[in-house]
Length: 134
Image 1 (cartoon, rainbow, N blue to C red):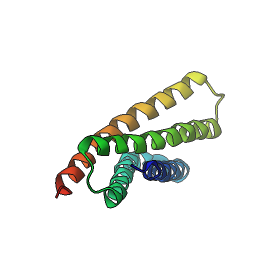
Image 2 (image 1 turned 135 degrees about the vertical axis):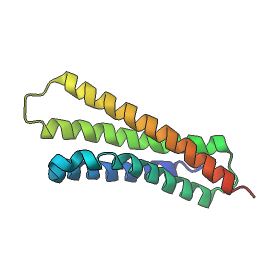
Image 3 (image 1 turned 90 degrees about the vertical axis):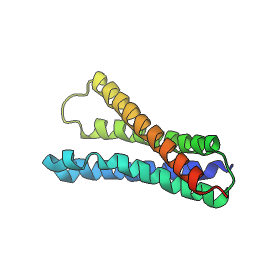
């Protein structure tokens, strides 16, 4: 399989979510909590697009190969988000920086996106594998 599909999709998804988080932090203010869960929907949509391109170029793949593709896309997105969230935290933090807070931000980013991404990858792998078999 072509690794460029998962890397490019993950890169675009990660940058889009990071831009959304930046806009949410800058402009939403008190209403940010209401829109904060949309980022996981964007992750799921990014995985969906990645699977769409995967099945467009490689129609006859197994469930395990599709799931691995989703995990590769998730890994690329996760690297972008860890670096981006850390930089956002460092630049937007008004008080003196405590490194235990940075550790907490990184831990929260890894856990939340990993769980959401793995569940989305399982779901989309199952959906595409079920409906694209000939």
